[in-house]
Image (cartoon, rainbow, N blue to C red):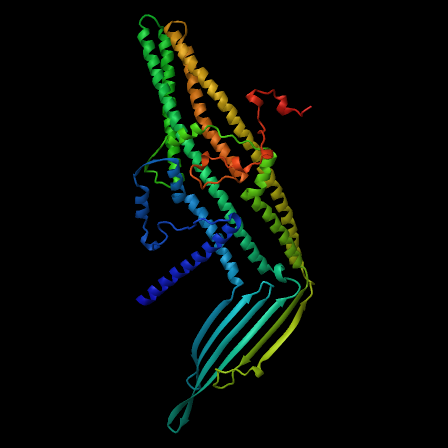
Length: 569
């Protein structure tokens, strides 16, 4: 029994390795066809090679209660996300399962072997007993022409036990008979369902195309996943800056309150002190709220990375400083050129175009099913000589038949409905392709506008910060001289904190808009280090493809609305 259990266990592991080898081979082949390269791909996790029975809930609970301390930068965050993200793992498994489905379709067009053997005994107390052993080995294969070929080899061994009665006693005798047979059968459609119009062949074709679509979709998902992680990281470190800004604003309000309290003895009204105290409490509230929002966002970021919520995670600020130092990387591409690049490179768009072609193929196949059936069939078989020779065949005793079977299309109502359904699905796919193209053209235009909007807001924010800093400094001096009120100081401090926080948000917002546009264009490459600071369009665009974004204002001057709202005269 122990040996049987070990054998079954080894067999299961063998089948798993066999499936992995075939699936990974398919994915590497498709990636090489699409991208000209392959990536290391596996769906294995830390639990994959363990017996599921040994993985207890207590282990998972202990893992999620881990209280490690991490100080991470953006590159480390990306690495953790790709390794630990539950969403990313599920998406990888989806790709694996799509390729696994293809192995089943391909198997149908390969030689399928079967081997059976049956031993039995039958009889009664008064008659002869019969013992038999029947064995058969067969192989069948679907053909790309739409036909099917089957070959079988079998033998039957029968032993007859006969009871003889003589006087009061009796005796038994036995005799044997053994027969072997070899048969071959072929069926081939000549009209309906021939070749590429055969439904089984179409199922294989579609399964192969589905793997291509899934590889493209997964590549797009990887890009979007990386971009979303980068954007989430910078939003977090920006929130850190805002928390610090709010705390500095709070401490400045505290100092202002204390200053006025000291002067309230003989030089300031008590109402001014109350006014300053109100502003201080408001700044205190803003600081507490921003800190709580940051900690909530940090927990959400842990979920994105697949880290236990109990872990203490701290984010480095170096990446934000590098982003600010790099400035707002421009995207100067003509909108029509951008859409043309999208048509050539964006994975979702390429899938939509190819799926439209699939729907046209489905119409052709459905129309073919309305035709008459004309099938060629042939078979041949030969048996060994009974009663006991099952090792030799005599070719001259082969039996065969062949012919053509015609089935006129007198009743094709169901096939008619399938054909009409295929036509409707074709038009639906046509509309879907048109919608996808329109959506991406809109997303590209919106992305270009958002980038220019963020750039113009950045210029405005820089100037607003300068003005706000001057106003705070001047009003504090005027307050000491008795020439300004606390309300003037409070308003200038409010403007300063707003300008600081708005400027802090612009860098992260601009980066998210720029990376999102690069994803929509299909030109982003997430493999290089610090890819978020690189400009793939710099070497990709030809001079004639460069142009101003839809919202561009020459020399950053504000243009009147008619320039955008009315047709050019």
